[in-house]
Image 1 (tube, rainbow, N blue to C red):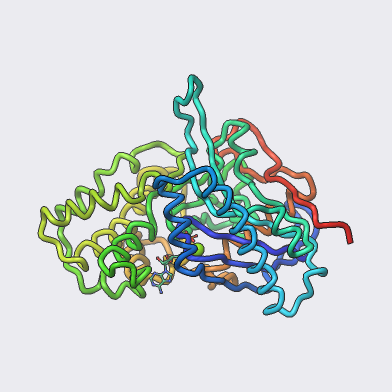
Image 2: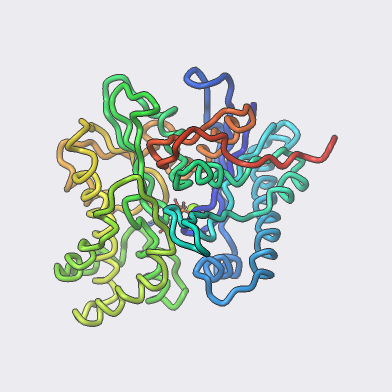
Length: 388
Ligand SMILES: Nc1ncnc2c1ncn2[C@@H]1O[C@H](COP(=O)(O)OP(=O)(O)O)[C@@H](O)[C@H]1O
Ligand SMILES: [Mg+2]
């Protein structure tokens, strides 16, 4: 089966598209990434996504309109990818579309008299299916929440399929807006795999860069600003006192915690310490690396022998994050995912192609030890292509 995966993460930078060829069933499924590409959101689109995700005076109408408009954008991204890959859409059997996360409350909180967890990914899949003519699986996370999980992370299923190794314990690290790790001990079974969000990856860095450049720049290309900054230990210490780091996994986080209010507090902290913009960007960058190291030391390395850390996501292009990780994790080889044959930016889109394939075959693909679910769940909803 040819399957397209569509992913837009919490960075809301754009849509990654991966085309995979998949056959068989786990543990003997055969999967290959054939091609991948990315479409950047126009800045008005990104602004609106962030406005809605930051819950700034939006109406139900805004949310509904954005859901359908994004469905169109996802469909266009899928069609553009098909043209680029020279694959006719009718040869593609299935799309797995993650959608754009607008809200994520993985752990239940009291709401109208009942403990409630919820998550919302938008980008109307009926539009994707109708416009592409390809049956589309979307909305993967709610089924896991419905069986007591946090609805995240879901990529560990793909990590397990792709990177398990009989002899080597591995950790897969994705540096999107948020950083998350999947721990795959040597010769692991799915039940031995666990995963959680360690904290921010690029989200805070991006927010600082956008703030200081008045929106002209979206991210700190190749850590250029951070490299010019000086380290201010008091700021880093304060960031490392973050209570999120101490919460036991499974845990997941997002813009609700590391969004605008967090950045405002960090800016205030910077002013108290007379930090220059590049000093603060440096602090956020080092914090990303050290919060990951902290998570590994606290929750992983005492129990499991890990020999490789496989890095993916846009943050894999940030040399300061990668160098800090390598320096702090002596004895663990830090290597970019591309060394295992999958480009760093294609991984999550590829994962949602794999997850869609499982759903289409009515197989569960959450990993309960990663999400905290009580039991396996078949993830997602299916929007059928119009009859041919
Ligand atoms: N050359 C680069 N240098 C530094 N950071 C980069 C570079 N390329 C991408 N990034 C970072 O990666 C982010 C996008 O990563 P991505 O994996 O798409 O995240 P998400 O899954 O949240 O959308 C950008 O917002 C940026 O912070
Ligand atoms: Mg992205």
